[in-house]
Image (cartoon, rainbow, N blue to C red):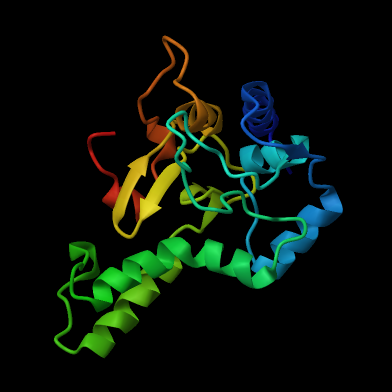
Length: 208
C-alpha cells in the first residue's frame, strides 16, 4: 500500500520539475507499467519515487547547464516505459558495479566486512555478498539514486560514483531543486535520522 506522505512528496517533486521546465514530461507511468517494470527488474519503487513517475515521466532531452555544458549523462532519465531492458539493467547495476570495481582494483575494503581475504577471488565473493545484501538503489537521473522499497519515502537522493557517495538532496523535492536550480531560501539541508540506510550510509561524504 502506498503511503499518503509518499504520494504527497513525489507529486510535489514532479510539480516542481514541471515548473522549472528543464525537460519534457510525458504522461506518467500507469499501474500496469509499474507492475511490469518491478516484475522484470525485481524491485519495488519507494512511494515518493513511484508518485513522482506517476505524475509525469521525464523524457530524455539532456539537461544543459547555463555554461552550455551537458550536466550529466547523455541519456540521464531512465527510460522506464520504452527503454532497452539491458540499458535499464545497466543503470540499476551502477552502484553495485562501482563498489565491486574498486574492491577488485584493491582500492577499497569496508572494515565492516571483516579482514580482507588474501585471495582476490575470495575477497570478491565476500564483497559481492555484502553489496547484494545492501538496500537496492534505483536511478532517478544519471548517477542519482533513491533506495527502493514500497511503503518507504523521504530518503535522500544519493549521487553515486563507486564509493564516492554524497547526498544530493534531503528528499526528492529538494533534489529537484539541487539538480536543476538553487534551492529556495530556508529549505532544510540536513539528513533526517529516519533516512539512514544500511550499507550505503557508510560511504556518505561528510561534507554533505
